[in-house]
Length: 332
Image (cartoon, rainbow, N blue to C red; front, side, top):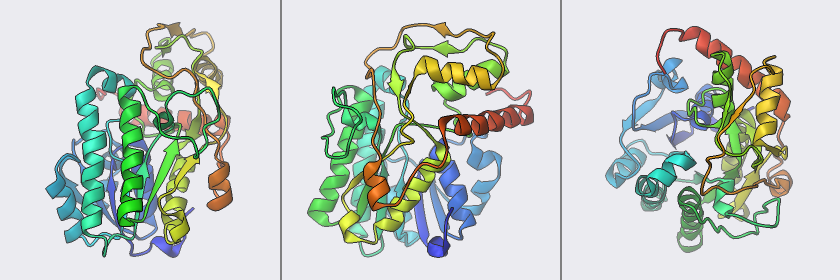
């Protein structure tokens, strides 16, 4: 997956304990990178901690809202590459507490970008994690990168702002930044059980009916975590070329399906079609349909998703079965 490019690179990653961060960190550690991770809360069930990978990292404890911590991490560790994945990632949490989300996702992003600007002689590439939510609601789908960020709801607005901040730091200060926009990333190590894929798998493992918050018809773009990680890596490497800097890239398997379809696929793959989903129809302030075109990433980065939705779900189900088997008796 990764070549010798990353050997001895000095990488700072935020959001390392999340789904993408844990997979990306493991890959970069194996490639020989010097890894520095910002860790806010200690979650013993995080893949990074549970597997012991965290013992191979230089850990900086702190929050994105603390500029001094970010600046110190970049300066003292002489960081040349930044992956900014840290954020408050849950739409329902953002709707309940927008201030928390704005502080983490917006304030945290401009803190990090400013710390990178101050140390631009060190920092050669910055990848900022965005989302399809940054585009907001549109009658024209799939989303393409020439469409403006027009978020309307709290989480979506936080991602639109992050995109614009990243672009501002390129256009004004020539900070070598690239923006990665993905849809719903799924795979092992996602412990946010309110998300449809891990939540459904856990329910079935526990012999419970899956819960669907919406009416089940919302359409989303799903991408397997290993494909997303490869997209982040490809984008970071491409930032050595000035024509890539300041650009946003969609990463998509282009396999958009409705919520009820993905739940039914998981039920079928787990041979539990007898467990009928409970449809709450409670979702509010969420976009109805979202999916992406990844033509730009394919053309300019040579990136293409390697896993079909069913292949990715099979690997994900296997991961969670092993996970729950290992932690049986541990409350999560």
